[in-house]
Each structure stands twice: as structure tokens, then as C-alpha cells.
Length: 194
Image (cartoon, rainbow, N blue to C red; front, top):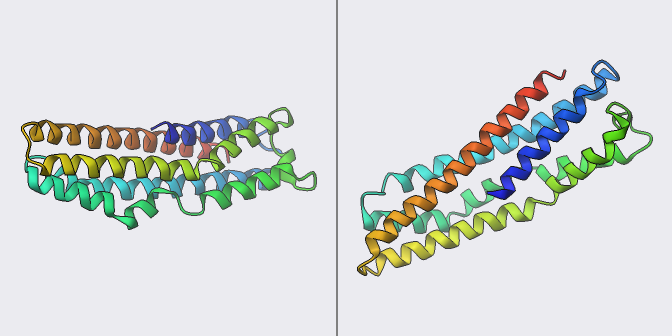
């Protein structure tokens, strides 16, 4: 998922910008690191919830009828959908952007001033992907619902559709897992900056 790569790249960019000037305005920098860690934790929790929700789907891969039911249940699960978008992500990003834009806020002067614009652009890109996250999830849900319909039609290729469902779920899970690893690595880098 391209959207999740944006998240990990943004966190890595932020960590790279923060590295400069360690020891300068230490309390301000600690707050920035804390804010970025909170973003990582929110994303981590949100994506873990999705991985947990995929378990019942994966447990039915061997049973065509149960698989179709679980695919539909996943597609219709509004609680899971709402968890996919990390809580407070947009407001956290907006807060950081406001601080970096203010000439009166010490945050702007606690990082390499030549890279403030880069940091702002990276955060803006992350802040703009709230809607894209939900669109990518909705596309997955629509795709799984369509596959469930094709499986339930009991046509000659319904077994192939079951294998395709397994492929789609596994690819989504792999993307999500690799993004979680990258977010956790970025969070670990942030820990070393304070």
C-alpha cells in the first residue's frame, strides 16, 4: 500500500531532520520527539487492530462458504474501518505544522532551519493522507465483497476465487506488517534522539 509508505517515509524524514542540533533547545526537541512518537503509537495500534481482524478471515481459507461469509463480514465491519485511520492523526500533524510555521514557537528553531520546509512538506503529505487511507481500505473492502460474491456463485472458478482472496488478504497483511515494522523502526530512531 503506497499510503502506508508515505507514513513511514514521513517519520524517517522527521527523524533525520531532528538529528541535527542534538542538545539545542532540548525541552522543545523532546516535545517534538514525543509528538512524533505519539503518531507512531497511534498508527501502530490502528494497524495492529486490522491484523487481528484478518485472523478470522485467514482461518477460513480452507472452507469456501465460510471464507465468503468472513470476507463479507470484514467488508461490512465499520468498527474495523474506523480503526484503520489512526486516531487524532490529522490534529497531531496540524499542531506540528502550526508550531513549525510560527516565528514565535521555539520548535521552528530547534531543528536545522535549512530543513524546516522539508519537514513541513513531509508532515503536510502525511496530514493529507487521512482520506486516502480510508479510500484504500474501502477499496480492499469492495474487492473482498466482490470476491465473496464470486465465491458464492459456485461457478467452476470459485476455487480460483478462493485462492485469489487468499492472495489479496496476504498481500494486504504483508504490506501492513512491513509498514508496522518501518513505523516501529522510525519510533526506535526517535527514542535515540532524546
